[in-house]
Picture 1 (cartoon, helix red, strand yellow):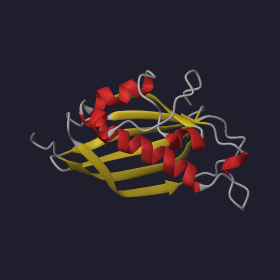
Picture 2 (cartoon, one colour):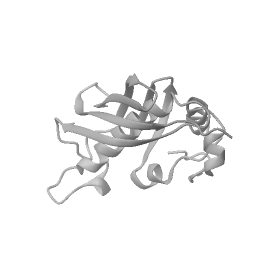
Picture 3 (cartoon, rainbow, N blue to C red):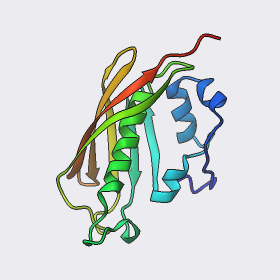
Length: 161
């Protein structure tokens, strides 16, 4: 949650596009760039990234509960969407961008405030010129599966100067 620097924000578009995706994401992990505001809102963080892989972690709490007494599916969806999207983002060349076109989520076990820390790992399945796909898994510290997801992302080629 970037507690050491307390730094949350969005970098200007020119800063984002001036570096490749992996370098950009590593700068967030290292605290050289701010963590996105959504990570402060929901209490999760990007903890590791490599080419085609991203790992997020968070601790579900009572503030994430829905009216039926468990953590809202949006918590799992947001962590997995972040991990999947960043797995694709890690493959971008300087100047390229992307956006999520589709997210498919399966919840297989209820998450509660007693679940403890969970990690969402996203792994690239395919990277083409204009489409990337990834899959991911949300697990607790003992490796129990809580949700899994897939995504399709549209990749925008770098614009010639």
